[in-house]
Length: 178
Image 1 (cartoon, rainbow, N blue to C red):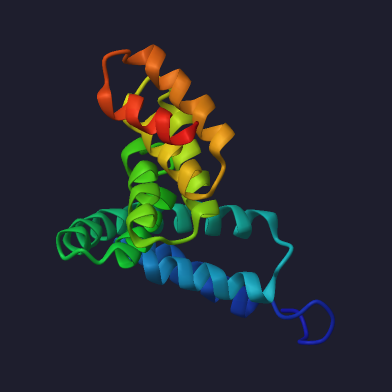
Image 2: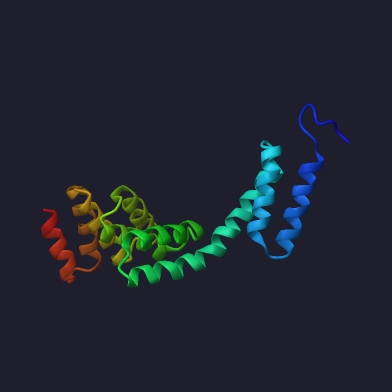
């Protein structure tokens, strides 16, 4: 047993790690994350604890993404676009591979007249993940127009026209961008 001087006692860290393991086995990811975070406060440079915490935190975020998606869809129906944007952002962060969630953040921010820089990041993420999805390209172009970045919007819309030459909405947006 170490003394409480020096680098700190090992006992509390081990207790937190046991608590984290038990909580995770019981399916309580929030409690597991909290216990790992407590262990990290005592041993901030411990790589294994940090790795466990990162793994459990990601699992928590993914698990919560389902709830946030339900919330986002409800907020959209209510026309609460700023709240929907925040909920969609949590979904997108919990499911980084989800193109729809990234695009939904951008669309909700557009409708809320919110942070266009953030909207642009999420819209770009959707386009990067699915560049041939016309909806993603149009959302990015609309965000760029709203942000006053006409030349960038025009460039995206020219890509969209190549994907769907008959699309009237794209043609109208292109006229707006000129």
